[in-house]
Length: 102
Image (cartoon, rainbow, N blue to C red; front, side, top):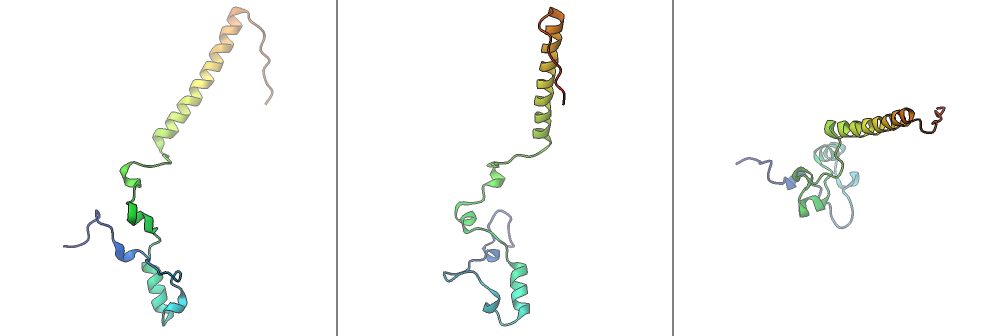
């Protein structure tokens, strides 16, 4: 039938054992060890036990053009409100606002 992307591929997961991770001394030759290391994927056992949730929308860090645009819009809104307040105070003859030196 072939591999499906929906099913987990347990063959690439390093099951290890109770005594610790597999090391160089567990193989006869350097070639066997390098072949093992090139095929191994670092996946936690919990990902297979509970399922990988990142593709289902449980992302904790959303970084993208939408979020960057929203952040820039918030900053622009703050700047425009400060400018509007200063213009209002100048027109009303309110207190003179010192310009900060940066």
